Length: 167
Image 1 (cartoon, helix red, strand yellow):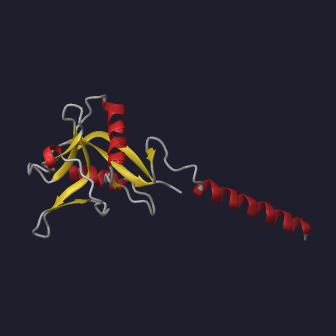
Image 2 (cartoon, one colour; image 1 turned 30 degrees about the vertical axis):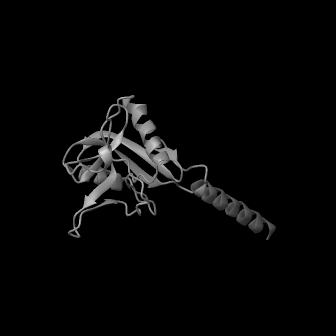
């Protein structure tokens, strides 16, 4: 009987250890993803259209952790994305898709985050608002300012994916 209890104890300990290795909060983002706040971000250098970039981001989803083009909810998050972009492309940056799109389906055009995140009122548009040149948003280097710009969705750009961190 004592031998059975010892074997059971060892098996239970191994199961618990493997469970904690899987859900350990220390493993929030795995390279090449970069951690910021409660999310992981991936700069995708391959130029894609907006829809192709979103499809690619979605293909990186994990069970219970959907991945989309990044929603940008604050100046702090925007500044983090700039650092990520500049870490690859240097100070001049690169035109980069993020997950903001003009939704014209309701008849009244409204800019929305494609991941469904509610807008918290933060925007960083070039010259005060979208120019009407396109229905998809990019981060554009306008001599070192890196502001948002509306551009045609079929243009090819680098992109940033965002996924909830693992906890």
